[in-house]
Length: 214
Image (cartoon, rainbow, N blue to C red; front, side):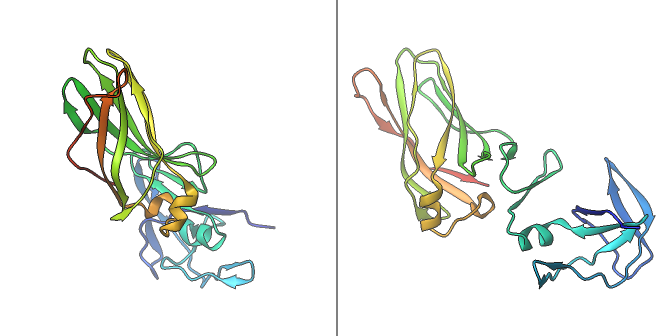
């Protein structure tokens, strides 16, 4: 009888023991795991793993990151939702507590996370609130990723009394030029916001440098 093969993230194992703790739902339970020197071969190549595969109740469990990367798939972990994302997904968001990066002159900018959509497009997500009496346009200046200068795509118009949900777009072709092929490689972004009056393109000013860690 053929056994079904499931891939999951093995978070904690006592290698060589007959009993391990396995995470289930929001708690833990003790299980009897069988180790049998299981080898993993992907497309003819042997896959080396830091965590040894095991068998439980007739199902073989393998470490998700080692298998996915061997098959050329990007792996991301969302700690807030306890979700593993394999490949690009519009539901993957590297989120953290909302961070206000500018709050002055009746203008407020909040960073809400780094996201990747189904096409692999990466955005630094922002909420921009304009509580002033003027209409403003927001752009970025002196932008860098991982301390390497970079040209993103971003320009957001926000009329007075309104809020905008937008993102600083990081083009894939430009990311490859600086050696970044996936969102997990982006560690930080540094930039200034340039803000100017949308009506007359005057009264422009730059904020202090903003630094966001991912």
